[in-house]
Amino acid sequence: MLQDRIGRPITALRVSVLDRCNLRCTYCMPADIFDKNYTYLKHADILTFDEIKSVVKCAMNLGVRKIRLTGGEPLLRPNLYQLVANLKSLGIEEIAITTNGLLLEEQAEALYQAGLNRVTVSLDTLDDTLFKKISGTAMSIQKVLEGLRAAQQIGFKGIKINAVIQKNINEQEILPLVHFARTQGLWLRFIEFMDVGQTNQWSKDQVVYGKQIQKMIHEIWPLRSVPQPTNHVAREWIYEDGLGKVGFINSVSEAFCGGCDRGRLTADGFFYTCLFSANGLDLKSSLRNFCDLNVLTDLMATQWSQRDDRYSELRAEMNHQPRIEMSRIGG
Image 1 (cartoon, one colour):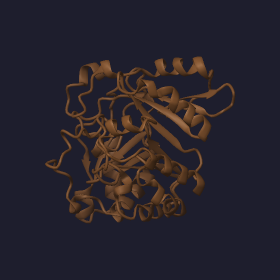
Image 2: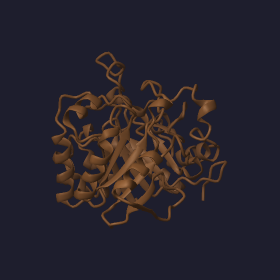
Image 3: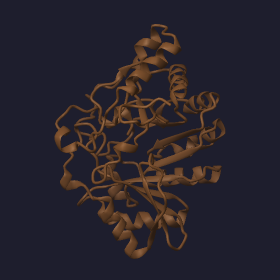
C-alpha cells in the first residue's frame, strides 16, 4: 500500500468541482474579499467531468476508496449528478458531498438516483437572522431545512450536519442544534474554527474548543464514547438514551494529523496533500497534454510518498506560511 513519509496511506480524495459559492460565510469566503471584483477561475480552467474521472481512476489505483465532492458550493456546478454517475461507474466504494443545502431540495433526487451515498450539510445556526448574518445572504434558512427534509424523504441515510462554532457569534446555537439533530434523525458534528486560507481573520481567541462543547452537551444529554478508527477526523460519542450520536472535529485543540489519509483535488486540477498546503501538483497540464494515466498515477504516487504534512500539530510555528483558500481546496 502506498504510504507517505509518516506511514499514512491515501484512502480518500476530496474533489472540489468549482471555486464559487452562493454564500459569503465569514470563516470561508468573507464578503469583503470575495466581492464582485474577486477573480474566480475561468470556465476553461476548471476540470471537466471526464478529467475528474481520470484523476479519480488514478487515485483508486493508489488506494482511494472514498470520494467527497466539495466546492465552493458543489451544487452550483451544472449537472453534478452526471459526475456522480461517472464516478460510480468506476466502482468507487463511497461518494459523498458537502453542501450548504440551498440547492439540495431541487437536486437531491437526481443525485440519489445517480448513486450518491452520503450528504453533509453545513449549518451553523437555526436562527434565521443569525444565519443571514453568518452566511452573508438574504436567503432564508428555511431553504436549507427544506433541502435536508427532501434528502431524508428521498432515501439518504446518515445525513450529517457540520457546525462551525465561533466565540461570541453562535455559541448559543450549540444546544438548539443538538436538539434539532437528535429529533430529526441527523448526525451533528461540531468543527473547531480553523485557520484555513488567509482571508478569514482567524484568531485562536475565536475558537470554541470541542471539549467545551462536549461538556455542555453532556450536562443535558449524557454522552458515552465509542471506539474510534484512527483515520476518522471526527471523534464520535453516542447519547446514553440511544437517540443518535454527535461528533467533534477538534483540529485546533487535538490535532489528528497522524491519521490523515485524505488527498485533495482543486477545481483547476491541482493535487494537494494537506488542507493547509501552500503548493499542489498540477495534474491538469498533464491531462491536457494527453499524459498517459499510468504516468499520472506515478506523479500522484510520488507526491504522496514525499508527503510529511503535519500543519495542525505544528500550527504555532507554521501559521505564517501561505495557505490555499478554503473555497479552492474544499475543506
